[in-house]
Amino acid sequence: MGSDRCLPDVLGKMIALIPRDNQQWAGLIHGLASVRESASFAPPEAQQMWWRRGAEEMGAYLGQGELTVPWQVQIANIWLDRESAPVDSTHNDLETEPIHNWFELSYAQYLTVPRSVLQSMPAEWQRRFVECLEELDSTFDWRPEGGRYWVKLKDDRGRYVTDELADYERGRRRVSNRDNRIGRAR
Image (tube, rainbow, N blue to C red; front, side, top):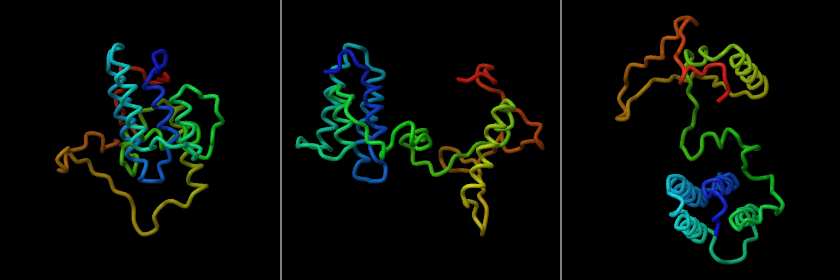
């Protein structure tokens, strides 16, 4: 099974379809993501083993009976290389849930980006970002009335540490980018 298909890609498509609003499926998501990660580092001769492991994960959560829930049918069709089956657009996919998919399997509740990093983006990126923030503010009443968010950096042991990015220097601070690629899409 799957000798001509890329297992990590197949599993990625499947994971994107599994509903995140039910803890029952968290184990399936985690199991398939674990197989996807392991398979992505495995040599070609070991891929067959990871296809079997993916089948075991699906069997453990979906059983061997007839699948009637649309997203379950769809991931089975992807697994069996029958992707021409109709898509149920009511569940997660990369197009309808891009923020959720960007966070992947993390338990993060918030996205925290230092101001000094944001102001280091090219002006065009900053304009697009500000436009999205303005649209967010005009669409949702999300800011707390009785307080404000406060972010402090902690190390991996939970102790507060000095945050090199905390001082935005009144808009003058710039952060070096990776490989000098600022201004180019990655």
